[in-house]
Amino acid sequence: MTRTRVVILSGHSLFAEGVASRLRQHLEQLELLTVDSGQSDALDRVLVAQPAAVILDAGDAGEAAPHCSVDKLLRSLPSLKIIRLDPQYSTVQVVTSEQRPAGEVSDLIKVIQPAG
Image (tube, rainbow, N blue to C red; front, side, top):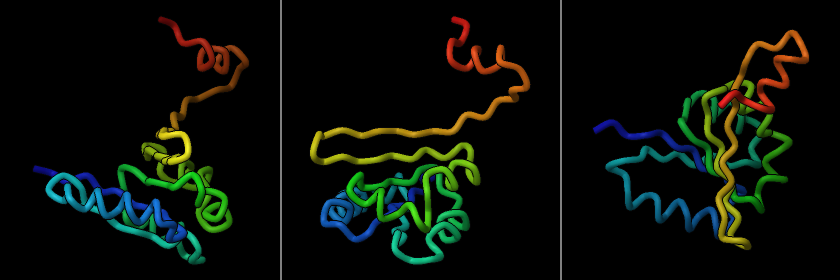
């Protein structure tokens, strides 16, 4: 079975550490790497890992921005899923990047209102 590589980008919050601990119980399915969001090389470490997903604690998201912003992650790894965990509201927000050519306003409208 192929394991999915996941990076936990953390400022070492207790919540993120708890999530990492729980995910480690599923190492037959997941390959986990924890990257300290406070380190200046955080973005480089995530890019080298080439993960399928990055997990952020919503509380850490602001701290991660200077070194590893969501925008930079999605620009560098367009197929990446960014999962923001928000324990306050018991929610998970999944951010993905979809890139399409757009030279006209009609192209933008097709993204906003896909045919369906």
